[in-house]
Image (cartoon, rainbow, N blue to C red; front, top):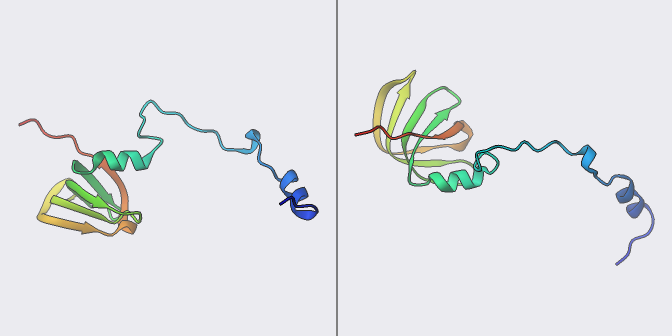
Length: 108
């Protein structure tokens, strides 16, 4: 269907142009521009999850959902870099998560 009147004029006047869009930052790291790909890549790998409170959890990322709720295995809890507790499994509510980062494995 073809629309006449107010709808078509509004759409024509408020069309976005390349000048009005935010510049896209390019990175050498392909995961930097795609968080979804990063998260799929780190499933089953060691990660650090930093909470808004400053507490770090280090362990293997078992799964996560769209709300950033996280399930981890072999989890260790750190406060100011000091190991405070070890857990088999840990579940973290997504609204507490500041970031997720990969954890470099220590050489054996």
